[in-house]
Length: 59
Image 1 (cartoon, rainbow, N blue to C red):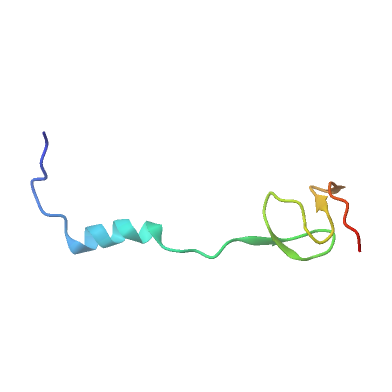
Image 2 (cartoon, helix red, strand yellow):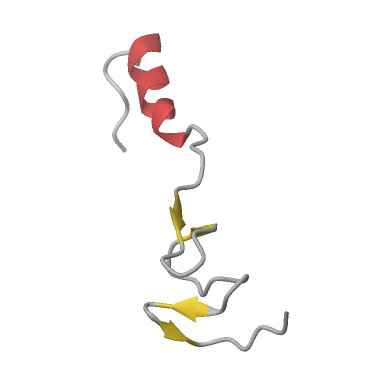
């Protein structure tokens, strides 16, 4: 079985763990009502997705 020849440095392990940091979710604006929503879902306020009505929203 293989064993590491050298100890992994602090910088190397910390930079590898840096990829797991928290990032804020990317929000886009709805082209119909201009509310901020995550991508690839129907807008919960107006019901539009990709330029067409997919949800019936009662006001």
